[in-house]
Image 1: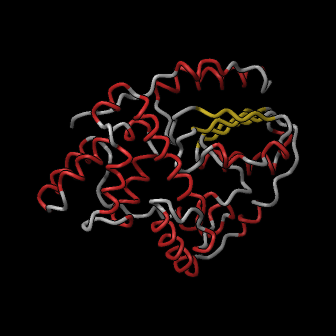
Image 2 (image 1 turned 90 degrees about the horizontal axis):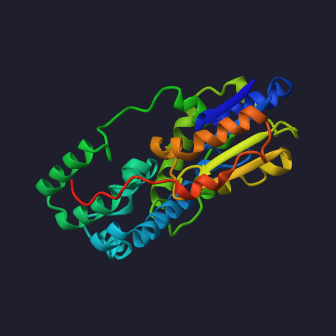
Length: 287
């Protein structure tokens, strides 16, 4: 079979390939991380990298650079404001960075947040606008399936001491999240199925890995070491792309790459030249 897994599906695909290597003809991993990588502990570093890449893309964009000429400085002012701190905005910004469509609104959101100066009515109005365009959502409960995954599967386990990049805007959220999971996981029975997440096994299975360079969760660096286990593999880094790939961008290039790979089972076959021509969602300048 030809396995295709995106995000957590990329994790599932790797476990299946490890257990049943002879049944896998090709494996395509989209926005995933190598099983040996403690990806949750890397969230702050990856998220800060994605934010920095957003600032760079805005500076190089004709419209964004004119409408938001001091975006990085405005972000620094926002973080320094007395009425805000990283813990109050960190998770929302991280979630926005997960989507290429939502990220296009982030410069506008930063400017709007600065303009509110902590006024309750203005913040409520801004939150309403942000919810309307999908940047934030209402309160939601953690899916029950998330608890055994976070508590049992090695790639998802996280400790406060393992959180990287203290300078990241998302560092405080990462530490608080690690402390939460360390507590709640004492209450969750550990499934024996977690034993399937053993050391990756060397395999000649053709593997295509596609990661966005602006992914705050699964950047290309999270596939480090995969080539040693899968010598017949190829890593493709999509410039500026986030975790949830914009569907138009995907149809412009990604889908073609995957089709060529699956048809030939040859990692050298797909032509990545189309990546340079991919058009990203335009930056929003008004609500």
